[in-house]
Image (cartoon, rainbow, N blue to C red):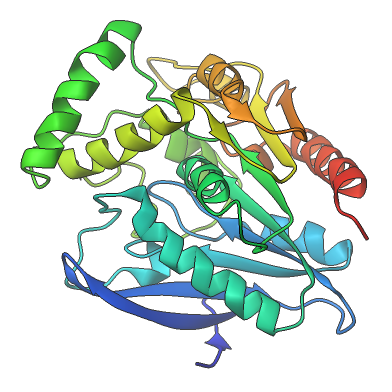
Length: 317
């Protein structure tokens, strides 16, 4: 395996990791890197969320400045890793992604990093939390950072108790049943520079309106949520970050820049209580968006300050 120049250019490289076939056939994951100082012994691996891929070079900039090597992973069926035989974002179990994370962490270790930060945003935050719990006996990484982790569906309580379990059950019987996706159509517009945002990214890989999901995906997510709700143990330091408020304007509003338009932040704080760890910190930010590091500059600067202060206390060397 070797690296080629990535679409982001500017020193970013990518490696295609070929994985065993799954229920749709051929599978790849894509490891993206930007190396820091040659003597650096720390690295971060970033895992994106749903309907997403790695484009947030602002994270790379900040970690490179702090002496880390930078890595990100486009999971199977997302972004750089989507193949013609695949439905974008498709999964029947969140454990399918463990293989991709295992492979990426192995490469990072082989390339000389001794301490690794595992970072996940939204669905990526859910995946890495479960991964950390299921991989407790292995020394694969050192600390965990979750940026607005997707620990519960942002739907009314009655739907959580009725509709979601029914759809999950259907997903076990027939995972290919199509379902609409329900998050804010304004979220993408608040990010992309062609609309109201400041960020440039590939709208085919991260469209404003996500492709339809299926019942199998609902079942995979619901199963992950149940594991969190029933209580899990993470034996590494874990930092959970979130906005201090959720927003849901019915028409375009500057309010989109002031809160989380995708998840209910109360779900994040409540479900974080179900994570058993002697080294857990949960921190909220005023004026932060769903992807905290894409918030307005003053807010994201504070987010990064908080992250590096926490890392200073929780990485050993």
